[in-house]
Each structure stands twice: as structure tokens, then as C-alpha cells.
Image 1 (cartoon, rainbow, N blue to C red):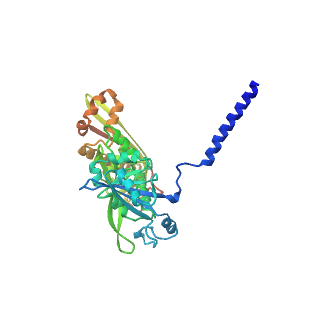
Image 2 (cartoon, helix red, strand yellow):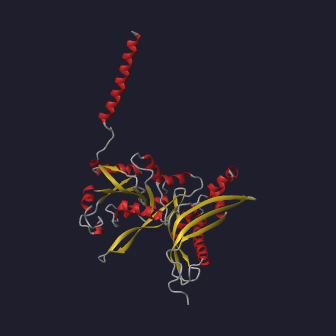
Length: 406
């Protein structure tokens, strides 16, 4: 009798488990949303009204029908591209006392729930960057619809102005700018910074946050008409969450060398024979930073190793081993100059963009406890030594000058 009751209990348990599994299949996702109910954003801007302090947001929202229509056209998809189909995005503007209120006010007139993909652009206007990006970062990280791996950047002027420019070969401008940022970073021009990257630097007591700077410039189209373009023009440097300055193109690359973010790209160095510039293609690079503490003095050593190929040399000398060694030294000097320019600018801004403080912390945690609170006072006076080793792997199919030196 006892065995029979046990078997019945087991059957009931199995039926209960099967019922739970089956009900999960037939119920579907309770919070699912159909694609035709979503407004897919390719970019969001965060601007601040300097007079009232109101938060101004704009959403570059994709128009699905336009994307489908323009897929077979020869134009760029934007108004400037001349594809004939009109823009594939629509820009919504909202206002509020906080960012979330501004987002909520979108639903007063908007007809779709906003969806924010991974490669979303978060563009902060200059006024917002001056006041501080803490509230922007907090909003993005706390709001469940946004992604921490989306991009953050600063605009010269208003962020919404960047979203209004429709250029490039991409139908959706936001996607085009995101690709531009990735391509720029992969060729070591300017950094690629996500919300998570920015937040990690913001959490640190010493490392200064950074992000790319976007600006609008005029160009001449194929038909001779003036058109607007968006370009990356610098790297914004922050003290805590407020912008305090920027790095130019040379300084930005120097920073990327110093933080081990250079993987490929082009180097222009001076030809040792005085024949002008030589071009080298980076095939691999690596850098590391370490600290030395000697008699109370801080010495930072940045070690960089790089390998590349010689892709352009217009001199009239044969590429002997001696000349190649001279070219390697010239290349190393160019890299050193870029890093030194970034270091000097960081001293000028008193912003530890390289994370030298973290190197000191790794070296001696006990000493760092005393230095951490005074790092801003100490930083501009630390000694930074830059060591660069370069190697040329290939010089092409010829090593003799086509026109020999007379």
C-alpha cells in the first residue's frame, strides 16, 4: 500500500513538472514587443538649455519603410545623398527638468516605444559636458532600455545638430557615425569609448575619463553644392565628469600608444636621407606601463614595441640593412614624439589620462595610500620615460632604388 502511494506521488510530481514546462511554452514572453511597435533609435543627444537648465533630448529614429525602399537605390539614403527616397530617419525633440522626464515626454507625441540598440550613439552637447556627464551616465545605466556598451561622445556645440546631419553612404546616419568611430579606433586615430569604459574611468580616483569629439564641417558634393559632414576632431578630457580640455590628433594617437590601444594603422616618419616622408604600416604593437619609486621620486616607464612594413619610400638610396636600421630609429622617434605630446598635454591639463596612478598602485600599495589623496598635486611633476623599439619586417618586392642617387 505504501509503495502504491509512493508511485502515485511520483506520477503527480512528474505531471506537475510537465505542466510547468508546457505552460512556459504556450504563454510566450510576457514583456515581448513586436518590431512594428518599436521606434529604433540610432542616436540620442543630451543638450542643456543654458538659460533655464532644462534637459533637451533628441532621438534619431529609424523609419523602417524608408530603409526598405532605399536598399535598392543608388543614393546615400539621406537628404544630401540625392537618393530620391528622402531621409531614412526622423528626429524627435523633447524637453524636461531631468533626462528621464525628457524621455517620458517623448511619449506625449511619439507613436512608438523607443528601442536603443548596442551601437547607439550617445552625443552630449558642449554645455552638458561643461556641467558634467554624471547625470547622463546615471540615466543611461539605470534606465533598463539602454545599453552600457553603447558609445558616448561630445559634440562641439549641440548634440542634436550632429544628429540632424545626414551624410555618408549609410542609409542610417547613426550607424555610419558608429562605424566611423570603430574604424578610427582600429587605425589608432581616436579612442572608441563606451558608456561602460567612461564609467570605469569615472569610478577610478585618478584616471581621467575620455571620449571622442564630433564636429560639423562643410564639404563640396559631386554636384558642386555645399553639404554638411560629421567628423571626429579630437579627444575630450574630463576632470571627474566635467570636460576640461581636449587632445588633438597627434596627442590622441600618443594616448592610444600609451594605453595599449594601437593594433594597426599608418605611421609617417622622416626619411633619414632627407628625401621627405616615409610611410610604414603597423602590423602589431604592444605597450605596458610600470612605475619606479626611488628615494621618494616617481618614475613612470612606458615601454612600446612595434612591428611594421615599409610601404612608401621615395628616396634614391638602396634599402641596405644600415638604412633600414636608420628608418626604424626614425619611426621610433615619431612614436616617442606622439606619446610625449600626449604626456605633456596631460600635465598641462593635470589629468591622468594614461592611468599612471594605477601603475604606482600596482608597484606599491602601501605608498599609494599616502599618494592617492595628493595625486592631483603630484601628477604634473612626475618623470615619464618613453622607450620605443621598432622593427621593419618587409620592405616590398624591391630593395634597390629605381632611380639611383647620382
